[in-house]
Image (cartoon, rainbow, N blue to C red; front, side, top):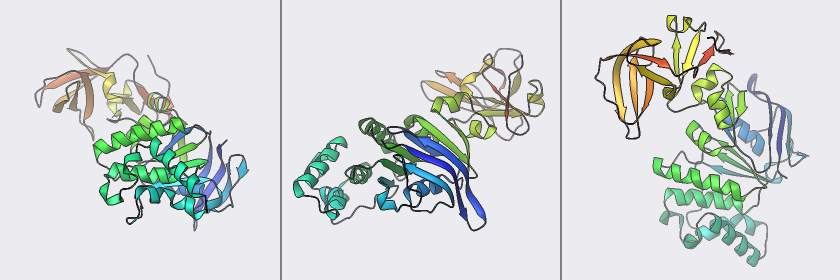
Length: 337
């Protein structure tokens, strides 16, 4: 088993608490993503798990063993960074075999382990190529394969797809998610600034803010039931709409949050109104951007194609009770009728 248990973890740099009272349990076979804005502590937490940063206070267990003060090489972890860090003069095979050879493993065992990892990652045809002859996605697969051959208890990914173009990121998201299913005895922890990556790949998401865990849950739990205004703002693409001031007063809330797909344009009446400033037809759906005098336009999603004119006045409302109410401290409050 490769369970990871973090208890009352703090990380300080001088007098500054970068991580504060982190308590998490990650099960063997689980894929957990750490998300949050820049500077929230997600990469620092990953480095504490890896042993690259010392924990200031608290404990870390991997596979039931306390590894708080154990060196990185003894923790049974493998880390994949956004930079591939491949040896340019070595073939794919030799890059993947390097750590095994350092352990003085027999040649036939090295060969079998590398070939098994290459097969999982569709790298078998490229084993004799140099990194310069590979695409960015193939290089990242080699970096992942180099980690797989070590048979780690825990995989740590630190924004591994940020250097790839959009199409390759989608492809690699699928490949990493499929890899997780084949490594059922290994926990995977994935740091990303891209919440779409987290939503599409993770079993659970940990949302961090200012070194504190805001919420932990499945992607749909966070999407449908955010526990704070911050989580509601951070999860979802396009992001949730936030209506404030007198437009929220009728709902007895400081802020009303409504996702674009939960708004509908009315032929008359409606809870709110505004002027169309832009619209986008994307084929299967459309986005209408409406100015109602707030910092950001409201986004309304409609199925199929839409046709609106800039400056056109529209009335719109939430669909049923598909909205979220927040008080002045950003805490959710029950819906009112």
